[in-house]
Length: 123
Image: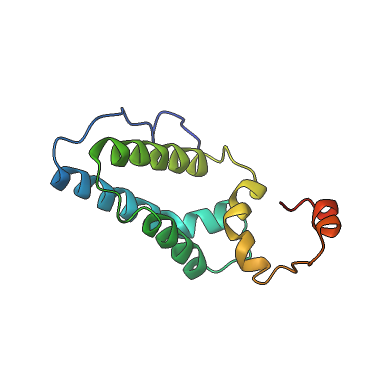
């Protein structure tokens, strides 16, 4: 695959209405979902495509109840930036795997003492 940096570039724009913002969000979501198999093969992930798609959905669901148009536009811009960086292979494997950190260690050991938390770097 040849990397063309401007291939995935899009100009930033503001949504005129909530309906337009919704269409743009659905389009971005579908782009990410279609790219999941390519992300797995590009970064040689040992994670199934279904897990990547599930994580994409979780990331979009985090912002499901945002209703302000300027905020939606900024989130769409960040999504497009992440998509471009991911698909152009500008990220390293660790950048991709940080999204799956919670699945690796679902129940982190929490100690009771202040000193132990301090030494482990917890707040």
